[in-house]
Image (cartoon, rainbow, N blue to C red; front, side):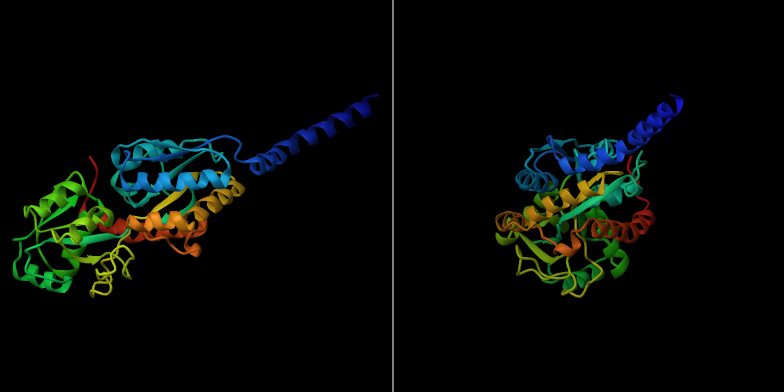
Length: 330
């Protein structure tokens, strides 16, 4: 009697050991079976929130489950992003990550998580290029003319920048380094106040997202010298790109992508990727994003692997600049 009992025990033990792998497969196949939370680590109304809400709506249709937006701002997005880093890797908590949260914050903040190793890339959603603006009565009508004027007038001009270590601040430092110009940096809490002061003539230059800036550009209240891209963009075809203007190094995108906690199963990552990428290429959704100044990347840039490589390349490019500038968050 002992031998059969022993065989039965071994058989049951082997079956039990196999259960987790089988259940994981079944779990991934059944995903999603309940609502998904998409963290937007900034307050409502900003560019990250706009992208998140549009993508969430499209993913709801594709996945057959509600995608709930949770806004949790603070510390340039690091509070909400950190919550996702610590979430269960089951596909039910994901985050909209942008250049700030998944590149700059990794060196400007003392984080309790790693911006690369604690996340699984899902998909690059959209690029958000910026506009280099000047007040309307500046004696320059192109970026080259502006650089010439700045060289002739060192330390006389002022440029608004939003946040130490932010895109506007770093691009201003990069501009000074590459061109040998000197101008004063004026810090602002947000892009809207800097654009308003530019319109009022309180500052000479600033850098803004296209959605905020274009109404003022078209009304003639400010000048647009260049868009921070290789090519011109659909929302502003009349504005030359940085490369076209002769400054190929002056390129920047405040890109947005989706990320999940590290360890999220690959099957789930691929389901989320398909839903997100499909949403960005839906004609109506695509036009909505383009109308707000976003550029939709081609599908080959929207794979999880491509997003991971892009993030690492951005870190390699910008961390030395941030470090050299000595920018650290309080």
